[in-house]
Amino acid sequence: MCLAVPARIVQLEGDSAVVDAMGNRWNIRTTLVPEARIGDLVLIHAGFAISTIDEEEAKKTWQLIAELDEFQDEQKKHC
Amino acid sequence: MLQRIWKAHNLMDLACKDLPCSLNIMEVCGTHTVSIFRNGIRPTLPANLRLLSGPGCPVCVTDQGYIENVLTLAGRDDIIIATYGDMIRVPSKNGSLEKRADNQNVKIVLSSMEALDIAKQNPSKTVVFVAVGFETTTPATAIAVRYAAAENIKNFCILSAHKTVVPAMEALLSSEKAKIDAFICPGHVSVIIGSDAYNPIVTKYKKPCVVAGFEPMQIIEGIAQICSQVAAHAPKVESMYHAVVTPQGNVKAKAIIDEMFEPADGVWRGIGVIKNSALVLRDKFSEFDAAKRFGLSDGHPEDMPGCHCGEVLCGLIDPPQCKLFATTCNPDNPIGPCMVSSEGACSAWFKYGRRKKRENKQ
Ligand code: SF4
Image (tube, rainbow over all chains, first blue to last red; front, top):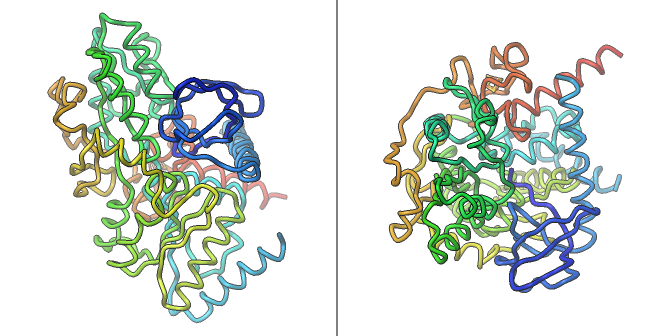
């Protein structure tokens, strides 16, 4: 449960932000990464941005998360 | 890419060739465990290089006493339990939260702030947030409590099982139960604590500590880096995850943890009490501490009968050595938390074992 997910900040007001990752949008807080701006990619964990991240690294992490989801689905199938 | 894989394997082979015994590397983090299995890394390693899964899944290391306390609170009409989904299926002798989910008083949340919102929407009930997790997760809890204090939300409190990773690594080394030669350190915990946090392990115990991200190439190169440190007798802290991990970590997040929490002795499943490994709310915020509000004690109830999660978490046994593994215990009917959590070692081994069988049949 320590996995953080990359997403792009699409709205920002104070420390309340809306982020987008592969078309999914949700609300987060940027309290821990106050320098983050609209358009920045951030790593998100438990509703908070915990660091900024670059495009290439974000792509790798999205790919990995897709694979882990697939891993878990596969696991359910084989139970 | 192929060239990088070759290079990494050459480094591993070189380091392992002349070793009199096996080289045991512990991957502390559950997400590493899953990625290692998912990407088939284990079978490609030199025969005398062993990977041990460590105590890095927060759900798995949460002791049974805490689970029983949550279940006791869940049984009260005046309480709403707000929890991350991972905790919902952890079994105890008195069932699990999932079995009570239809009671309307157990809510799954994705963030501590959602738990706070539930408290605002339900003024006649007390919301207890099941605060589990390592340093990646703790800042979120700290901020929620800070808001609760600032906005005077009195029907919100947290039951802290927050833990810190480095004291557990030190406890494993000093107990000498398992032979651990080096650590692959967790990626997203390190985003917060910074790679410098592992310096004491290198200084005191002379064990290599390499921070890696979760993609397979980083893990393989991390292992190779450990191997070259071992071969050169030069243990140090290294990070393969420069994109998000800095030596000092997220200073703001560390400051918020420190503002709200103080270290305390913590109970870990399988390891027992580790000094200064838990985080409890500072006295100033004790009204938000569910343990104090409801007079809960730690307690040390026994683990589930026959379950060897404790030994698995210390790297003493691999899951298949547990008699219940893949017989009575499976992801559909988990006996222990290491099978419940998708990041648990037993759950990862379960999938790996089945895949291996399929390959053998072909
Ligand atoms: S296989 Fe099941 S019972 Fe055995 S250690 Fe793992 S979780 Fe516990």
